[in-house]
Length: 241
Ligand SMILES: O=C(CO)[C@H](O)[C@H](O)COP(=O)(O)O
Image (cartoon, rainbow, N blue to C red; front, side):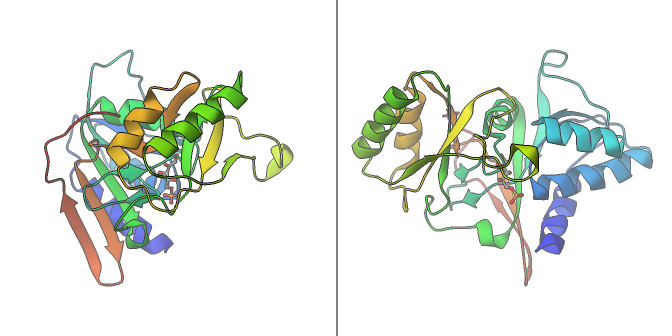
């Protein structure tokens, strides 16, 4: 599996040109991209990156990839990031690693978003992977009830759980995002209308962001036992729900 992730990352790297400004995703697949990019930078490639998490910032620094922020530059050429699920419209569930907020800001600021994954992430419909919803801890009960209503209005339902941290001395405590928020993971099974659900969740006070990436991915690079498939988005880059 790790080899497949690295192959997908290597294929995305072929799209990178000298002088590009890059969004650097988060997760085990994106980490391969950062490492391979670091090798190219050491060999003379001139690029600059914006990391989507503190973990990716640390990886990029370790690999010698120069970094900047979205305050210092006005756009990104390409963001390369992983995903938890990818559907045939190239809508995504992201946030398994908890970085969905910065990932979405960075993807929305990019001309192109290339999603890299092993082909187990390719699904006919989103929702088997629990949908992460990043929330403000204040008033969480009210926010959860509003989320349940949004689910019902969009024809889905399921258990919700506040994410707990895994490993280290934070083990078992509530997981806190880089932005200081919490994440509620919702087991929905099958999301009938991802764009409608994205819109409904975005309208809830207390929801900072959600893991549905609608209309953001330009292409997906999927590595599997039979090689690499590159799937291009059919519709133009659309709404950033
Ligand atoms: O959205 C993410 C982090 O917030 C990751 O891209 C997603 O969880 C996939 O991770 P991995 O490449 O480790 O499977």
